Image 1 (tube, one colour):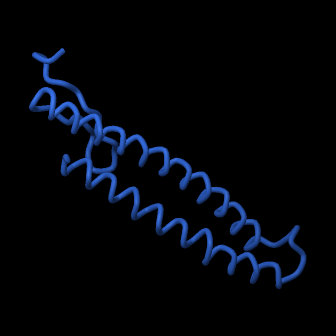
Image 2 (image 1 turned 180 degrees about the vertical axis):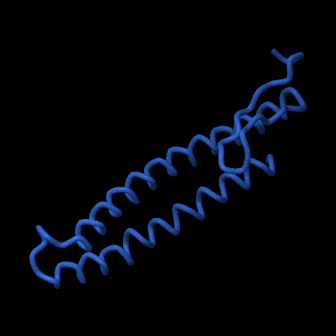
Length: 107
């Protein structure tokens, strides 16, 4: 498998694990503490925790989609290597998903 794609997949998995911990452990504690303060309509801590919970949920969904896309790229890369030999990876750095493009003579 391709090392850059493995690294991207690992970074995605690490971020998913960290966000799931925040979502399932830290944020419920923050929400419980904020609820204990009383009136939720004027409670900034509660509003922040609920907004953060929504953001974390959305980010986990996005990362899971990116992880699936990366897994698809890994499979495509392996198949292409088997069938064609060599591929170039084209991307915008460590934080972006790499896209696989066949070399010009393969197109």
